[in-house]
Image (cartoon, rainbow, N blue to C red; front, side, top):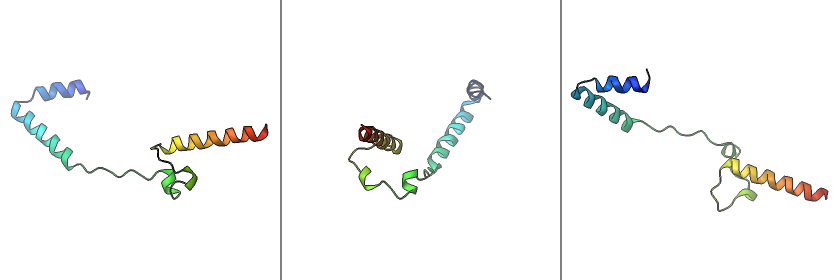
Amino acid sequence: MTLLELREATLALPWRDRWLLLWTVIRSLFSFKQQEMPPTILERMGGLPEHWLHDGDLADRDLRRVALADRLHQSTTDQS
């Protein structure tokens, strides 16, 4: 069933049934429990290494990208 078909079927209901449907959806949203996110790779490895700690709020991927860029930059300057 597409969203358009669902909308048309909902609008075809009597108003009391629409309110019951709406109430059921709202009630289910309030009773929905948020699932815990699985730990990140860095969390599974024991957290961030001390030299990666900073004041910013970067994602793990951003931290790895910066660390790899620093290593590449250092390796190219070491070879020169």
